Image (cartoon, rainbow, N blue to C red):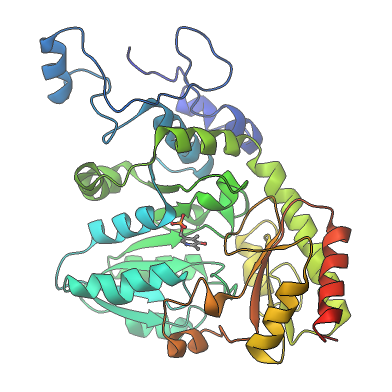
Length: 405
Ligand SMILES: *Cc1c(COP(=O)(O)O)cnc(C)c1O
């Protein structure tokens, strides 16, 4: 059975986002199921040996093995490509599988990579520890410093990696500026868009060549499964990334791809509501006045507010907070919360709070943490879908109990 979505990309690309999120990439089997089918299969049987040979030779369309492609994963990928406005997508088991596969497929020994230094902990490990093991050099820059970006390029720079807004500090990088600069040097730009989600920010419209996601975050958004996605042009995927993916096998399970595909149906409503809730919570916390700072890209007192709102349609679902009194008071505050869970995930329907220096960024050195502002009093709050007043009451009560006022 040949898989053909029956969808014309010229037509579906003109659908509005909400229609794409619900219907993009859907392929129906002859049974006519309304909800996309889950093809929990590793392999595929052929009518005859000649068909098997033809498929391996690329002369016949169809599936051969789920490490190469799976129909359920393909539906997720086609829908992701449509909403991102990318030519193609490939899904992976985790966000880190998407990021490490992309970066490792782009480089060879002797190459150089430039990256913003405010990154998710594991991304820093890939760039600072893993890639140098294979002879790849790197330069980390302050993402907001244009002169630093300019000075970082070398003749052997082949790729740029950045995250915006960055985890957990919410630092914003000017995607259009960095992309134009990178292209002058012939480097490929990879943007980790996990914090904004494809609903709020479209890096490829600003010049990025590759967009990577941890689909674990807003795309699942209900704390169920891990997943990742790589989106780019057909040329970069075919020539650079697929040869790596096909033979190293960081694939997503069809089950997880199915969960994420269903997650996309409600992504827009969830993200929009989470942003509205986050804006209300950020305002209430700022008004309370006891925190050293309340950073939220949607607030006008956010240092990079103008750039953030130029790149994103809303302020996002994440707030960064700082309490004085270091780790002890930060922990007392977390421990006093009753509704909001202490958890290092984000983008979930449930509001979650974490202490980055002892969790998500425990794997980077203290010096590297302090350089990007991850101090012992810093907290990352991911706002979910509960009623914002309940969240505000929970936070204010816990702040009172922890002596934050
Ligand atoms: C969570 C996260 C990742 C890693 O994704 P996993 O799905 O946990 O592997 C990478 N980048 C950012 C910005 C993240 O928030």
